Image: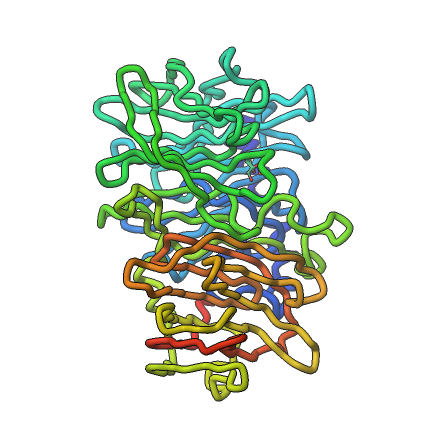
Length: 498
Ligand code: FRU
């Protein structure tokens, strides 16, 4: 009989062979992102196991190496020296044991820690479906950060506590004082929950209790919890199920390490777009809290359209740019693109003291393009327009355009992709008041098939996928019913990382 190691290696070889077949077709697709991380081929969802190890940043991700849709989860793997340029590494974890093998389950999301120089990852092994679902927490270990051995006494947590349910997944581990802690996402009786465990050796885990739970308005199941200190406070982020358009929430408060209770005072949405889900964070050697999210989410697109047009080209899904987290004066979470994103910048165009009126819209075509970073500083005190905004990926011949609208009266920021392409639908919006000085600061990253927006230095983020025809390159500012005043408009063409 094969050993755990042999079974795992066999499963990894099979998965790699499948990727080798699929990646050629994927690579040819013009819709592939130019500066966001994707798998070499096939399906990708949540980033997981984020860690800096032996000087490199590691991102693992939920991955189906057998097709462009979700199923048979593995952990794909990439590493980077600068958070921007990624090197694909062999698949790290494959289903091979009875507790983690299932076509409708597998190696689910989890986290990573470094313990005495060794990389230890925790994942949820998921098997069975519906009432028969079994989700257990497991450990795997690596000394080189590339090859992983599953712990021979897995699972390290084999049943949910009474306060949890069969939905019991996404272990997130961290060190606090002399102990290791793990929070696991769950939900019971319509309330999402974060369940807390403690360990001295990362192998034996004691259940402490419910660390935090929904008050009835915060979702029925909390996927992908991540808990970390930030400034003087603690932050819990999670991806709630059952909240419709709300895809990710944060709670900011205080942690009592004796009772294991987290008491929160402020809350908010992590990203107001349709396509930002299951974010996870890590602390790096510069003491920054860095977050990556999955640029997609469950159920945004009508099922008859599948998961978007890239599925036909053997791939689906990408990981966001790195976001650095901080709290503002009111303890709201702000997520700004890491400064390393400046490495992507190429040719630059700038305009100062711009006035746009309803008849004068264009930025003289200099800013036309697909891969762009745009920073806009709008002066709302001078602006008289009822509505203004930025058109991206426009083309009058195909009638396609993606519009970022702002309504000064209601202070609403709207991402409208109803005319972006034949697949995408609808709007995402948020209440985004100007900054104290009456200015609205917008930083926009456009890649081939996605747009990330950071408003007011990361206080409001919005990420959405779009699939315009490659001929759609038009960029312009517009104003309706009055004038728009911008102190500055800066545009950079962004370079490909591949
Ligand atoms: C979130 C999620 C996790 C789970 C994983 C499975 O997107 O549902 O809860 O671990 O995806 O791929």
